[in-house]
Image 1 (cartoon, rainbow, N blue to C red):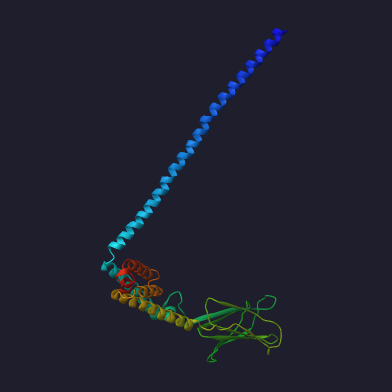
Image 2: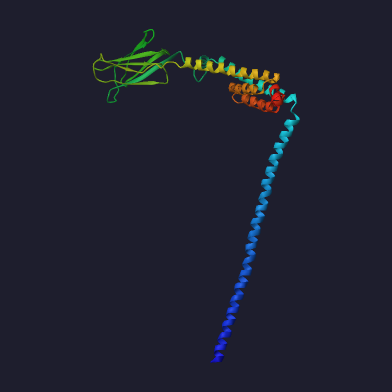
Amino acid sequence: MDEERERKLVSLRNRVRSQLKSDTSNKEIKKPGLLEKANTKILEKNEEVPVEEDMTISLSRIEHEFQRFASSNRENEKLRNVAAFCILAGAILGMLSGFMQLTGNPAELVENSQFFAIDDEVDVSGIVLFEDGSEFEGMIIEIYDINSGKNYGTQVTGDDGFFVFKDVPQRPMRMEFSEEGFISVHVTFMPDKAYIHHITMHEGEEEDISEIGDIAESELNKIVLVGTIVGVFTILFALLGVHAYFEVKRATHYRRTLYFAGLSMFSRGLIIVGPALTLIGMGFLTLAKYQFADQNLDS
């Protein structure tokens, strides 16, 4: 019995020892993996830091080089001359845009353009229908010039309800549709060969009149007025640019020169070309800042 007990204790000790050995080996295997991960993260951070440092160094180097260039060319009058030339070029382009705006005649454009060409005489056509949508045959139609009252003919609709007036001048006109037992219809319009009139007759007293259509007031005068105002202000802003040019040449008041140059950008010379040149000139002007008398006093 004692031998059996001793044998069991020995086997138990052996199992415990083997289990301890296996746990120790597993721990030893895991430790290198954790260390490798930590080392990898440290290496990644070390790799990222130089990139940020390089960017910072490059930006500071550019800023340092710019400051060095500005300080070394502080008394260089060529920079001020380039600024004056760019501002003057922007102003000249602005004046050209203003004169183009003033000399453009919308009326001539409308008359001479193929897209807006107006024919002297056109054919006026249309269809007359009953309330149920069937064709109205035998309807009497007359057409008058609204301004002069001149009659340009009379037409009677056919069996298809269709009518045509030939060679009607393109001036404000009025067509009158009248038939006994139906309400008279007066149509006010501007003749257009591409438009077909559709008229529906309603039963009623002939003395009753239904007015249709309207002559829209021409917007041409308003367009010319707005164009003239824009052209005048464009030239005025461009003249501020010319004044800024002389201010740069005099080199007396730095801030006032910048204000005049900035306002001259509203002349919109060739849309963006003029303002871009003026902006470049203002950039060169900042480099020549201390060549102005008021800035030397401040310093």
